[in-house]
Length: 214
Image (tube, rainbow, N blue to C red):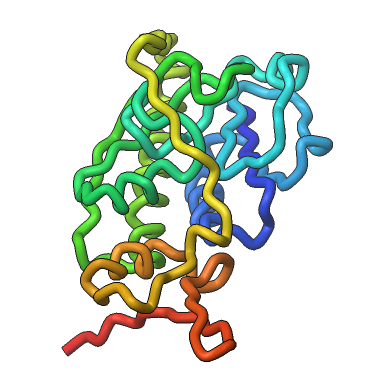
């Protein structure tokens, strides 16, 4: 198969995992990792992985199918950064969905889902590693389903819920709160792109966590 992976952020932490995935499957498929929709060509599958660009219907039509990875149990949790919102809500068992890309936000038919566990002590890099592992496994499943002539199942729109887009301001901490109440907000904050921060004594401080292994 001819398979393209579009990840619009070249420095996104998933990129090394995508490159490894491509290298491991290069003997079975023709694969490309691209970072801008202007590089789209045509093929069997287009995977959108952490893609911030709008991929129009005409672009999607160049491929037999265009699939999106979304870290929620769709139709619950449409929108942005769903796994982060779920962790902040206290969930440890998360769901990743593989769906068809459509014009409506996260509204496409579901190809497959995968469940994964995020321990309460997992920090941002560990959370990412668990998420990326599930994403790559679902991509393999998507390829298998297309090869077998299988089809996705429509979502029930009546059950949909939506998350707002996260911003750097969501990483702001209130230093008057106990650490136990702040812990989840600290551990889900990306230490490189959106570090947790707080203001005190007229200054702004960034806060990162490092797990101490004994």
